[in-house]
Length: 109
Ligand code: FES
Image: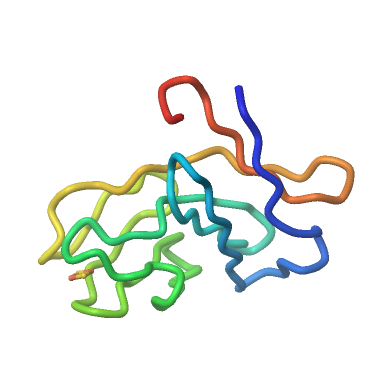
């Protein structure tokens, strides 16, 4: 397993998002949803908008794409509203020693 450091724990308060770039995976967005971290591929599956620039719907644990408003579940990566049909990738995110990290397994690069 490979890990990527994203930011300090204090730099990602609830309701906020942090973005990290990985050479193999590309941009990853890490959302703090009421204290729970959720990491997804930061690229809408419809027309590639940055989901980190979308609207975080904390009550649904989802993010709405800024371009055409598809809503993606941050736990599964699946869109619940059109026009997006395909899911985006999700990754495990956690805090280790005060640092927010994303974990990539063999299958995700
Ligand atoms: S680019 Fe995200 S819904 Fe179209």
